[in-house]
Structure formats: C-alpha cells, structure tokens
Image (cartoon, rainbow, N blue to C red):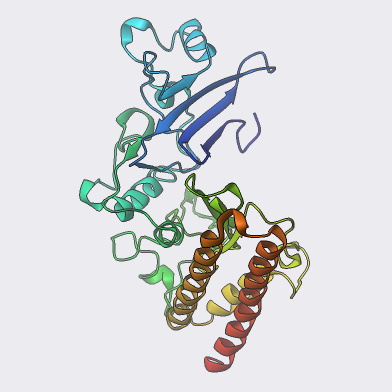
Length: 338
C-alpha cells in the first residue's frame, strides 16, 4: 500500500440508521475485506483514523455486515480460528495507530470525554489494537446537538492534562497550533494529536433527519479550514446549486471564498490567540444560532419550500458569514495591532 495506507475507516448514514464501515484490499487486489457495525439509535461512535470495530457477531445480521473474506483470510493466514471465539476485526486487520501511540486513541477518548463524560474513560492504555481501551459505541450523557459535535471537532483537550493551549509550547499567547517538529540528537518527538487541528482542509457535520422531507431533512454543516476557527455553514439537500463562496483553492488567495476567510482569521489569531479566540468563539455562537433559526424556518416549510428559495436563503446565509469572517479578521487586526 501507499505511505498513507490503503484502508478506510468511515461512517455511513441515511435518515434511519448509521453504520461504522471498515474496508481494506484483499490479496488479489481486485476485491476487499470489509465489515460494518450498526450504531444503536441512542448511541454515538467515534472513528479517528483507525479501525474501531471489534468482535463481529455473525449471528446478528441486523447490526453486523461483513464480507466472507473477513474470516476466510484470517483463517488462511493463521491469524484467527473459530475456536478463538468471535473475530476481533481491529485486532486482526488494523495496522495500529498512525505515526505514534495515542495518535488515534487519544482523540477517541477526547470525543467520549465530551459526549459521554460519565464513562470516565482513561486517556492512557497499553496498546491500541490489543488492549481495547474504548467502546465501539456509547450512549451520550445527553441528546447531541450540532453545536455539541462542533465542540468535539474543535477540541484541544482544554482543561485536561493534555491541554494544548497552555504550557511552554503554547507560548505567551496560548496557541495550540504547531507545525510538525524535527528531531534533536536522534530523538524523534511529536506534538499531542488533538482533535482540532490547524492543517485541516475542511470538516463537516451531516444531519439525516428522517421525520422531515429529504429536501430539508438532509443538511451538511460545512466548516472550511480548521474547525477551531471555522463556522459550520448549513447546506440542505434540496439546494439546486451551491454558492460560489464554497469554491476556491488553498493555492490561490481568494477573498470571495469561505475557506480563505477562515484561513485569514486563523493566521491573524496566531498573533495573540488567547485574546482573539474569545472574540472568534463569540462570533461562532452568533453565526450558528442564526443558521439554526434559518434552518427552523425552512424545516417548518418542509416540502412546501421551493428549491430555488431554499437555495437562495442558504446561499445568502453562507455569503453573509463569509463577509462577517473577513470583517472580524479586520477588527481583530486593528484591535490587537502592535
């Protein structure tokens, strides 16, 4: 496989259910080894660049789907035998954590810490594949909102012993955003792999609400650039087109794009992050609440919402957020200039 690997750990949802889906190529190179596990309706699941599916219950086709090659390959390779009990997909087929210990597992812990704190999970473990440190799914302590998911995506493990916004590395202005380090005297190190990460192209929160017409029930909350600095902007499935502010490339500065609005804000914030992030968080909440209000209005219309009106209103909201992000960057530059 390539340096980045040839397997995928994904989430697949529709208006009625959600599955964790893992897939990797088989030895033939023309087919795949795959497994999927249903997430219970009242649970959440965390998949952080690593396999998480454990024991596959072959007698439960409602909650477990898998290719025949899952067991056939493991048996042929001598990795598993039926007498061993249910096959642990992650223990058998995962290559472990990318780069370093805690690269994936710490993020799983971080998400469950915010969504299911009553589990009181440990942030440390012996070895990710074999020690099974975290549940595949868990019941959240309370109903999860879009804002709650956004909080997870922005997490720097604040107020824990792994808080990346404090300490010597964060500097005088508390920035958790560090470029990759090198090595000193042969000693190779790495920063804590937080959930929030500056080198993010975009992230999203998908809503599949089966009790509403598809046109308004399916919504993608899109967050360009890094989650801690972005605003998640809603786009409904019934839109006939996306606004031009969703276009652009990291290779060319483009003031018409949402991506560059957030990227500019992020770079300004590095000048005095501990002060600027307060204003950024305040604006994120204002913009999110306004988007929720717009969403509620469109939900109320349901199937009566004309597609062109739906498109126009959501595009206008996105363009307003873009303009306000640039204005916020200008305001912060002026307020905290030297």
